Image 1 (tube, helix red, strand yellow):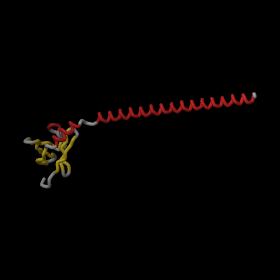
Image 2 (tube, one colour):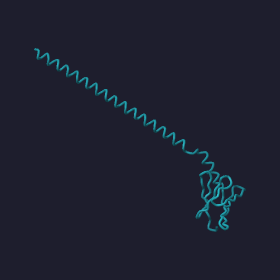
Image 3 (cartoon, helix red, strand yellow):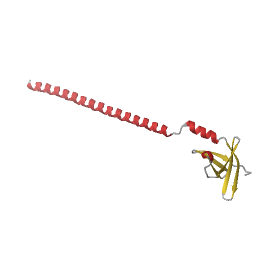
Image 4 (cartoon, one colour):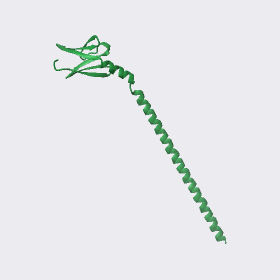
Length: 135
């Protein structure tokens, strides 16, 4: 009878220890899940910060379209080389603009004579004007 009673108490202790182990495992899994969620939130925050930084580095669309539009209004009238200087003659509407190749001129406009084209640039934006065969 004592043996039966001790056996039953042993089984009860075994059941209690299994329940304690199960609680510990559940607690550990919940802790790991919380850590994973915290890491996911940290990564989302880093991604949002990076997107914001990228957007702040991009130039405004209005500025680029204004400069691009303005560069599109210039027409190449002529290219004249005298001694070691090359002059580029442009037309914008009714105005004629004379620039030295490679030297920044009026309105921060720069003209560079390159093989087969004249590149005009302003504020980092450029447009290539083709040279025709007769020049």
